[in-house]
Image 1: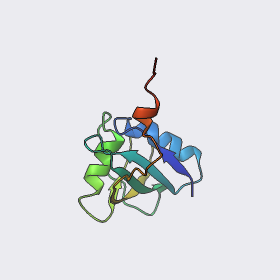
Image 2: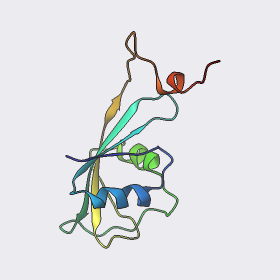
Image 3: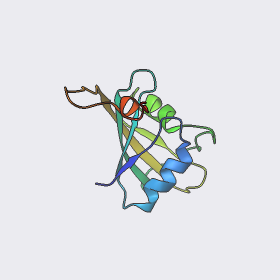
Image 4: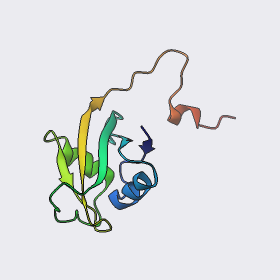
Length: 113
């Protein structure tokens, strides 16, 4: 299954365009901006069997989609650029555990001396 990695503030339409370039369904991965937990979403786009719903607002981020989808089991949504609705299932947040000897991205990108 293809994995699409996105920043939580990235526009939903941009992430779904990238997902459409792969053979859906895809797993979308992002992070919780508050605490760094990993957020995963199973996304099946362009489901013609689903009722066509109103498109999400243009400024919806992928992080907002996760928060909305995590309130239930599945969420039917649509972006303006797609004629068919899509389906998303938010997987419970996963805590990132750092092991001794591994540095975080933030720590490894700090320049020294």
